[in-house]
Amino acid sequence: MDRRLALVRRPSPRLADGLVTHIGRSAVDVDLALEQWEGYVAALNAAGWETVEVPPADDHPDGVFLEDPVFVYGDLAVLTRSGAPERRGETAGLREVLEEHGYRVEEVTEPATLDGGDVLKFDGTVWVGQGGRTNAEGLAQLTELLRPFDVEVVGVPLASVLHLKSAVTALPDGTIIGYPPVVDAPLTWGESFEAVPEETGSHVVLLGGDTVLMASSAPQTEEELRGRGLDVVTVDISEFEKLEGCVTCLSVRLRG
Ligand SMILES: NC(=O)NCCC[C@H](N)C(=O)O
Image (cartoon, rainbow, N blue to C red; front, side, top):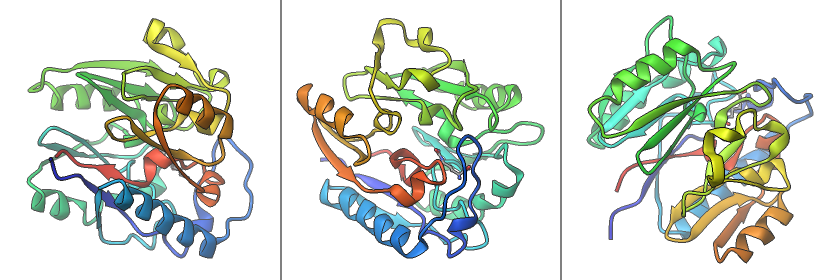
C-alpha cells in the first residue's frame, strides 16, 4: 500500500489572536486547542496516516492552518502568498521539508495572492476560489504552474466564506458537498453538487477508500454521510472553528 503522509504544524501559543473575517470573535482556549490538535493528529494516525510536524511558526497565530501556505499537486508544491498579509511568513521552513519529501517547490509571487484553502482538487480538476484571499493573478499563476499536468483549472467566485474549501469539499465518489447559504456558485458543479444541512458538515478530509474525517460539530451531516455508506471519523475542533478553521486546513496530505 502507498505510504500515507500528512504534514501538520503545532498551534502557536498566540493562536487566540488568529484572524476572523466572516464570524464574530469569541475567546479561544489555547490549552484545549492543543488537546484538540493532538486528537486530530491521532485520528490521522489511527486511519493509517503518518504525520510529519513542520517547523512551528509561533509568531503566526494562524500557522496551525497549514493548508493555506502550501498547495501540492503531483510532484509540485506551491508556496502561496496569502491575501492576508499577516499570514505571509507562514511559508518559512516549508521549502526544506517539501524538498526532503521529493517535491519540486515553486512560489506564487506578487501581485498574486493565493491561499491553499481556496484550492479544491479532485480527479483531474482543480477549482480555485476567487475571494478575499485569492485573486485573479493567483489563479493565473497557479494555472501556469499546473500546465505540465493533465488538469482543468476552474475559477469559482466566492463572497460568503473565507475559503472555497470552507464552502465545499469532495466526497470519495466525486460528489461536491456544500452548505447552500455560503456556496456562491453551486452551478459550477451541476448535478455533482449536493447540499448538506450544516456549514461545518461541508468540510471533509478524504482518508482513503470510503473513509472521511469531519468535525463533530455537524452531527446531521455525519448521519447523512454514514447513510451513504461512508466510514466517518469525527474530531472536535471547536477552538479552531472559532477562527474559521476546518478539518481540511489543519494538515496537508502528501502524495503516496
Ligand atoms: N483553509 C482554511 O480554512 N483555513 C482557515 C484559516 C483561518 C484563519 N483564522 C484565517 O483567517 O486565515
